[in-house]
Image 1 (cartoon, rainbow, N blue to C red):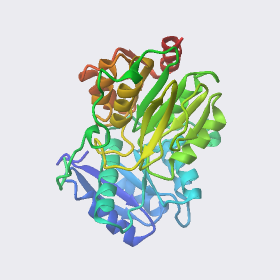
Image 2 (image 1 turned 180 degrees about the vertical axis):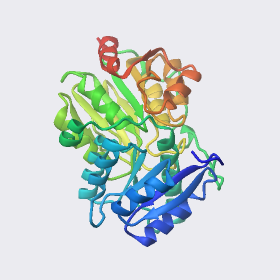
Image 3 (image 1 turned 90 degrees about the vertical axis):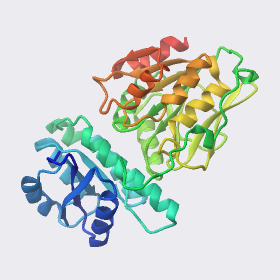
Image 4 (image 1 turned 45 degrees about the horizontal axis):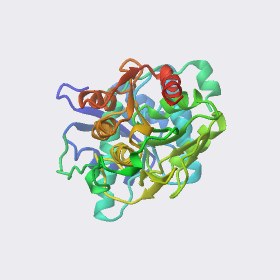
Length: 366
């Protein structure tokens, strides 16, 4: 970080319009400073040596060398926190998800003109992603991995889960204990890799799981598909009214809140619009509150790596409703923000390293 304690950012994008828009967005946050631009990876490589940025925003599709190839070179030679910047396309989504496997910290969508609310939400997401990347633990990409890896300038209202769902009532009959457990998971920065490890550790008959991973729209479907291809348990992007059943993981779609609901003995999800909650949509706080309200003692909460405090209040509500909650430990987190805040709020029962989360969930649900 620079002497003035600002996060130094290098913007790599072949579009001059995008570069200028990104600069305006990033420098609306007083903790961020754009130190330079590059229109392609070859120019970027030279500027990295001279400018020594803390974070790079990297376009996926560029001339002379694509962003994915450049990312592999950066992460295998001289790792720097990278935020991938992609258009909302199917191909771009698949490539951006693959970039996370190569070591990119976050994915953001390219800023586009739109309604005032849309632009403000985009600004929040972009600035928060860069700030998260600046403090993330970065690992060097091995040659084998490279080969096989498939405070702010504007005041923004900070809403809590009340904006989407009323607090749980202890008199709610849906909280009656049953033999079937449901698992609710929240993650952000570093969560894509953490979720891969966690879900890979679950057997095909594991309890139903609902996940909120902070990620823009259009990427969650590609992310769910990739996980489905490598996990024993079924993984899909959540759709409204999907049942939460054994052997299935539902990933909250980007830009939609996902809530757990119950009808008799059946658990299902509601996917809906709404304002940003704890600076996010989907929000972990919203999911966890719904679990407190409709599942109570039948639920197991898991909070994983990520920046900020989304999920902390909701997890405490889950615990108060009888749930058992687990937090990922600091050592195995890319960013120990969300778990730390959940622990601080008193909502956590167990703290475990990433590689022990799945086995702990199975033990609690048996």
